[in-house]
Length: 562
Image 1 (cartoon, one colour):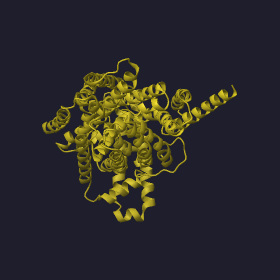
Image 2: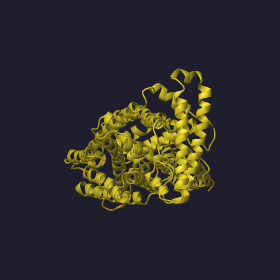
Image 3: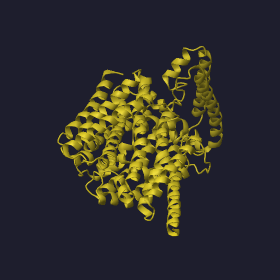
Image 4: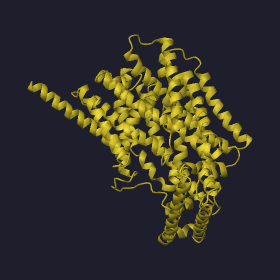
């Protein structure tokens, strides 16, 4: 990286940390530290909610997902608007009426303390793991690409977040996320502009779109009923709705964002603002990945975007085989360029069937070539990550962006990591203190003592997250990994809340036992690989409700008989 890139990166990150500490220097009450000053306007709520969800994983993994698999991943978010409407009508008015600090406080008043504690623990487990992955995601990729030590990157990202989150609590998270979202939007728009202007002159935006479509990258809607297919309109509308209901309605990292608003209406407007922007934002990020694919249709792409894999192969006894695969890939890509050159934009529409058949044939050979290269990497260097989806966008940034923009895009990735991690640490600490510590001690902390205890909890969770980041494995795709972790727990948690909202006669013991059984079943379904992970949200929610109702029925019948 050049000096200007380093300057932009360090100045951006330094400003965010410094601004967060400075703006929250006057936080003196426990209420303000944990809940914010409750003066946050709706648009800031919307940006904060969006920044919490849009981690570095979004900007590293999503373009790579689109590069290889197309834009079908956007269906994952189709349930978001429906979920937000339900949350605005049911969840927010209740939370604001009860004046709770956490979502789980409500469960004790409806059921009992053990149900509140169980649900809080389920949240702490899944969010604690996800926070570690949120730190790990940019660190593993940047460490490989830039040659920086992974452990030190994990520590660096974690410490930067800990500094201002410990300093100012919820208010620090909210005030810094506005700057972080500004950096993110500016960086992604700049990346799109550079990609487009780097294409050959004859490739207009509409022609690029047509080429992407003919390469099966604009596959927005999949109506298949194949339960093994992770991304269909059904998994998005059904599984996605349950996931988003649980995430935005019961996950403290999100609930804490809109509890800091001035009123019910401000919270509702903030969430609706997020719902209106989130799907278009994800569409745009995926489309950036598709544009990177189009860029590499006219520029040579590596056989593996992971530089460690390339290095390992070139230093192995199988280097000649790997070079043969690279040459074969290059020849196939040149063949595609020749075909592209023979068709004008008008011809694409007239000869779409013939054109697509030719492209399909070459893409099938490219797919086989990729599978052979992955198998070869796994054979020769089993400790090196052969799945390179998460390296696509960072490879483009470092090799094809001009000086200055490299630093800005790296700032985007690290800002996203910091914004989501800060929200998560803040929520983990709040839940630990409010739901686990305060109700179970004889003398709950107040005032300065409560602030100091919350700061200590934030620091401890920050250290735990860094440790998780240092031992985390790289799964098939990082953005999928975070959603998998959530899906294992979210359905169960959502079901508990729906029982509290709508099933007034169900008792606490029935809910508690049903939740334990449901969690065991969901873990078994996931590790048995019976269904795509998105369905776990719906199954977990429905199962805990059914079990609780059945258990409650038998208990009631038994009491009546006696």
